[in-house]
Image (cartoon, rainbow, N blue to C red; front, side, top):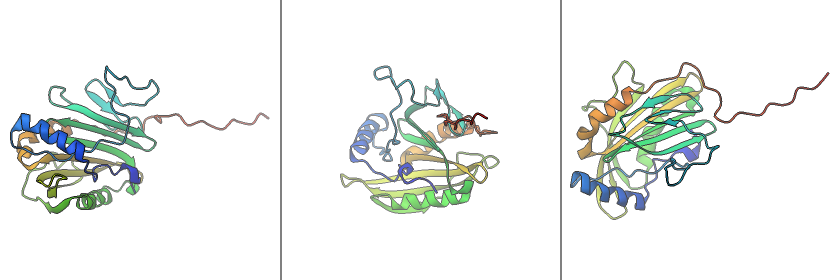
Length: 232
């Protein structure tokens, strides 16, 4: 199963929540945003604080390819901004957002490559987050990925109490795909406030359509040293 430290979306960080709510108030009036915890990684480099030269990254302009597993995606930079990236042994993670919602792409070795098991664990994780009061499957809403390419997926409505006592109502799309049978899964998550779901649906639909699955694993992000061959 997925390493424990990768379970980032179950966290609800008060400071982040309040910053998001403040930003949304200026963009969409009364809308509230799903708490958006950052991926547990070195933040994406900016001109003010360049990343270390040896830090692996899959970002190139307005596209990304996970260094470990080769999942690819591209986006419209006028709509989407990279919020964080996490690259570690056995894990590629990208967090990308608009002002009113966030999408996570996480590729990792786990669940024996079983997309159904990945989805079941993700659904359970939603209900275990701090402050979550109710999680309801939404079976009457459209999904942002076409059925012919979609993995195991579902849409959920959730109600949660924020640290300031306000009640948050949001929508969360979760999808798991098998990347390499018997080994690796891709977990996709889209989080948005209920009011933002329809507004950002077309943007998310276009984004997720651009996901490209690899044919074969790329070379390791960090080369593994081999043992010396004994001389005869």
